Image 1 (cartoon, rainbow, N blue to C red):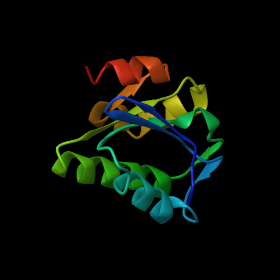
Image 2: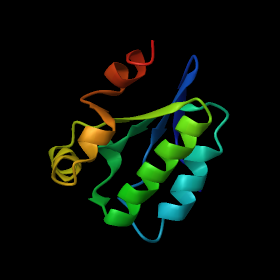
Image 3: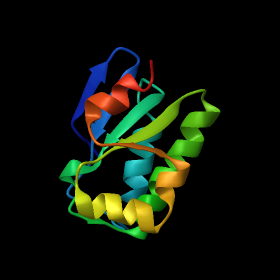
Length: 108
């Protein structure tokens, strides 16, 4: 899996695929945990379909990055994705920001 990324110092921003579900979740998790930086912002704005397998991949990657002394934060202004994070209570386990810039700045 190859996804667009941006680097801001020690933070890498990963722009998620259009669909994040059963077909892509394992590859997505591996991608996140094999980056050259351990502070990761996931930009969910490009994701139109966010399934439970995708959410599980995000949680697993978060745990793996924390073990590597890093962290994972989410950026999304997409109302549907923010509602999914709220309903599943993931927004209580992960830091969620309205913009990529806010999420990146939170690492400082």
